[in-house]
Image (cartoon, rainbow over all chains, first blue to last red; front, side):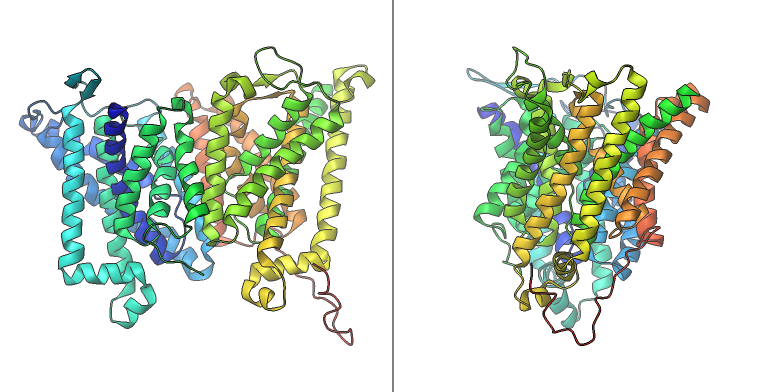
Length: 304
Length: 324
């Protein structure tokens, strides 16, 4: 029970990071982007490439921090992957979504995003293969927190949760303390009004893709660090991040953060009552419940 | 020669089954502007529904009632329609893309059930032994397959003719009106939410018909047959043929299914072994590129929708809009 709760909170922090950008993009560009979760996969695999590259160039960086399977090279690789993923998100928007946005309706965008997701996922499969990869082949030993009930936690998991919280805290400070943060929130909440107030919308769209890509990359690396890399990361996280944005209310960054933790812990706790094979359906049940009780989510505004 | 004919019959049967599913999707997406992100779920619901009612008894699972074919057929359609009704009821009054997310979720959830609920669906190994309809009437497999092709084509023609009538009727015009401008349709007193729900359920039921025919043909169904790629294939068929045009939908089904099977054949025949294991991903990239490419360069498809103008003149206004 407590083990499931802990694991759920950890997954929740990863879902939250993935949902931050999605909620902003969905509200600003007004379409459900089914290619968004592929950014997690791009980030995780970009970090794998940079990690091997840095470790080969400067072997000294390939040393782990005590207990963690994290290395200096992987830390740097994660930062590089965040930049690369943000840039990919901007590039995909420029190459495909922007063009369709200019001449067609929102549902064509949804449609196109499915196609984009299919392409990205399978290009990754072609390059890296179907088998699961790991950043480090060393066995990460779990620490025993208590024997009765048996509670295990890996140092990597503690690190991931802490790092995710730090990223969220930084983002919160930016949102609440800087002019840029105000502009960002204004755009996320009401794009038209923000534009009237002098916020350049086109530039903000790029910034939002960059931020969303960077956070998604971090989420992808964190997932891969505590589990493994697989081309299906995007597919597996798609429904959870959508559930997080819908629970929180589309357009609400804080709602998405909270929504991620709700979806993660609910899926973790659901293991108590259902076999693990049904867990992929859990976010769907959460979505249905929210739509039934409070269609605009916890912090969203009712829309017409 | 017999080999060629029997292959063509096989190809034609599968393509015609898929064409029926594309027609169902066309009613939803092409005519009413509803986004169905889980075509595979309704296809699977039809197939599993028919299998559970009409399949042979199995002591290890519920179902297998071995009911007559027409009842199994109707049950499969009913299950697909029921799922669509439940999802539509919850999402159709909300933001448009909620339907996309919810239907995508249904596909994930039903696939999880098909994969895990062994007592109900046989789990990952699927269910086999569906009694193929009218099999006793034919002497050999070859004539049976030709006859089955005829059966599927008759149903395809019936669905096509029915939908053509529907979209040209006042009812079809109301659906298009809702697609184009919901506020205006509401202002004319049309209950947009209810009409959308009806179109969504009817379209899903037609996709369910395709699922029933699929299980009738293969006599076997497993979670693999309702994998997400099926949804993408059926979309690609519709967007290539032309959303909103029923003839385009059928054309797209045959074209894309032809491209899919021939690319699979060519890859397995001529590609080096190292590439062959990636046949799936290569074909998936092709489907994704077809979808994105069509949306970028020819969103109306090969056969664009033809809007027939209602004859105006001195007809009393409102005469055509009184139904629906």
